[in-house]
Image (cartoon, rainbow, N blue to C red; front, top):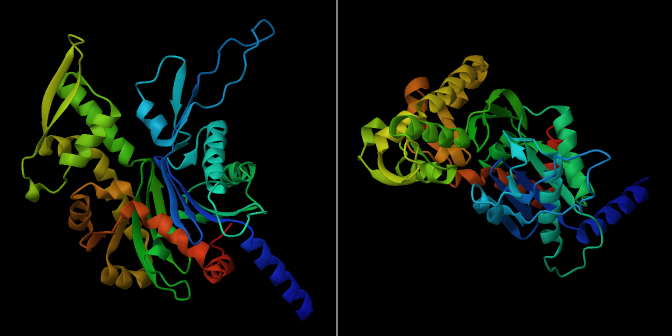
Length: 370
């Protein structure tokens, strides 16, 4: 029996040496891929540009050759709102879940092909093993969709791990101990507030309010106040450059935004101040602050001391909105910090699992891998 176990281990090691081991953070806005012993090898937008499908169907419809996508990633994202009428830009992941299965399959297949082309010292004869980060609130049907996408892209095995667990792992959570951490993960399409302990979620909630909703709030605010139509790229730029939720740190910064005047349909420019951006996104931010308070209300009393000592940690690209941690701090009276390189925390956790097989096995034994 021991000899058989050794033989199985040797075969597994051989397969591992002749195949890639990959970690994928498939987000609403960005896709990050971690390759074993190489680090993060891909950081691209989760966007795809394709020829629009003909609406004319049936027996009388003409036969049209099916054309593939015309652009992927950042190139496709830059085409948004600038594309010709026969092309559409698709974002297949919305609010953390797959919204367009066909587009997601083509996008992931394209990115995985790029990974297969990376040169290595040993030929990669076997299909790769893939670990994917998924939101905590996804259903089993949505998990099967994600798994099928990667199997269709050529993966040998697909393991799913909750993103909050990956983030906690990257922040130093010890899987062997029952210590806990409260994380606020604000992405592009969803926000999760989770208390994580022993490789799993103790209590947590998620809402479909995040960075993209901040952009939409800015667009609507400028439309109502100035009668100016602007795009998401302009709103995102304003949010990044002058967005600040901390009223005490108001430096009265301004940014010039250009768009189309709704009254005359002519180009128009307006100056937007820091306080206006704060007013525009305040309602969306208040939903996140309220969510943190609700999760704390449900947290077991035994874990409150640890949370008070460690504080609340914010991760995800949306948490980089300046001053948002101050608002949460004022509401819950607990120290709040934004993690270094907040948008890279989940992919760092994936990298730890990809590089250390023992951590993956331990997480599997705790039920954190599906």
